[in-house]
Amino acid sequence: MSRSKAFDPDEAIDRALELFRLRGYEATAVDDLVAHLGIHRSSLYNTFGSKHALYIAALERYLARPQPDSGAFPLPPARQVIAEILTEQVDEALALAPRGGCLLVNSIAERLPQDRDVAARVQANLAQSEQKFFTLLCNDAALGLAEAESHQIAQMLVNTVLGLRLMAKANPDRQQLLNVVTTTLKALG
Image (cartoon, rainbow, N blue to C red; front, side, top):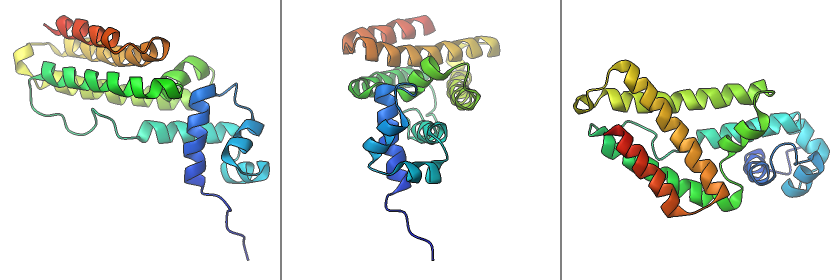
């Protein structure tokens, strides 16, 4: 007869996510995880396999969370929708800043390019975000953008989101972040 786990692996992933977000991957030792999660070292290894595998599970959990810009975009005007998305990103970035910031941005800074598993997940997430912006821009005929321009602007918008999240961690000044949103929107015309 097998013993049931004395802890909830889903809860452990959530708690590990918060610790990784606060400290980063390298600064979080297995002993830190064991203490923070309240589990035995053997339970961590038996359930997740390794610290890296737990980090990947936490990153996947983070990337799968509902996003303000997820789902179907409403019909144009794209500029209004982009303003709403970027403003929501500012609010989320400010909410995350005291808790270590955005795990995606932290992962880019700390784990890339050497960690291929993290790189693949980050690149897929960024490509998905870029595609959403691209679709939004292409669906707004009033913008009059060529396909190539829509791709470039979508890339700029993804970089804007990443920059907002990074800036919120360095200087959580809402007005400063909203100024970036305003300038970005001016670039759209």
